[in-house]
Amino acid sequence: MMTITEQPAIAHQPVIHPADWDGREMLESEAFIYRLTDDEIADIDRAVQDVQEDGLDIMDITRENFPLPVFGPRLAELRDEIVHGRGLVLIRGFPVWEYSRAQAAAAFFGIGRYLGRAVSQNAKGHMLGHVKKLTDVDYNKDPSERGYRTNVNQRFHADSCDVVGLMCLQTPQSGGLSSLASTVRVYNTMLERRPDLAKVLTEPMYWDRRGEIPEGKDPWYVLPIFNFYKDTFSSRYGRQYIDSTQRFDAVPKYTPEQVEALDYMDELLAELMFNMTFERGDIQFLLNHVTVHGRTAFEDFPEPERKRHLFRLWLSLDGERPTPPELADRNGGIIVKGTRLKTPLEAE
Image (cartoon, rainbow, N blue to C red):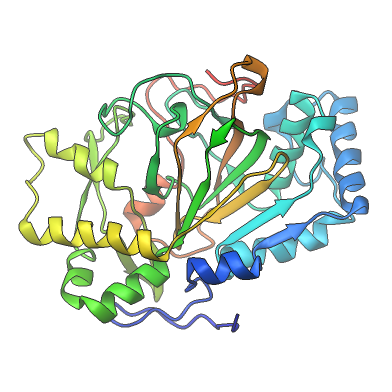
């Protein structure tokens, strides 16, 4: 794959950025996959042991008290690929089965601290999140539910943070493929084929907070899908969160042009995406500004201890990357009245 140097992004013109990739290219090249060496695994293991010996809470882990002299320099390169490159990295080969739940959480949180600052992922204040089936409710039909608590197909979306990380603890009996797409490629393709619809998606769109409403805010917020701010392209998408705002009387109803543009966005995502299988111990990091992710439906093993289970991190870059104020506000995490920050070791 040809290396592309990022250029200043201008609305209604093609975006030149290393994250302009096609799913088929990525799947065939596996250029986004980094395999840990034995020395790097040993390095992480030593840092986890330090955390345990010092009696640190997971939330108190920092780069300083989670030293990675071997893996750290490589992790800096991977961070650059996430933040300034393709926007996607998969770290493979971490032997999660050799670690307790607390040890795996410390390893994941510690690695994440080399990439950004953890923020709250929900109204409960989860700084360490869990992706696990907890309900039979379909979040596509119930606006009070979140997709990570279900086993239904998760439509393409970007999370409300700069970087999202996932660590695979357990794989399902079937299904549960990770679906990925570049919103840079989607935008450029839409601009080439249907510039009229690309323009519609640079205009304000309403988003549902799904009941997690910060004090003084509306139950929704307003943000275009394609954003151009300080010469930087940022996209945010999640059709289900846009559609569900239509239940609010104060939110304008879709125009025919908006429906057509959103439908075409979905068509292009289906055309330009790729699916990959999570293996136990896989650690995936995505830059939400240039990628979207989803998941195919899955079926769990009957044994409770074998149910599909991922750790999740939402990471903030603290303004390192220019983002529109409305998006920057969302990237600070979800805090509502009564939220208390915590790092639970089990899904709740």
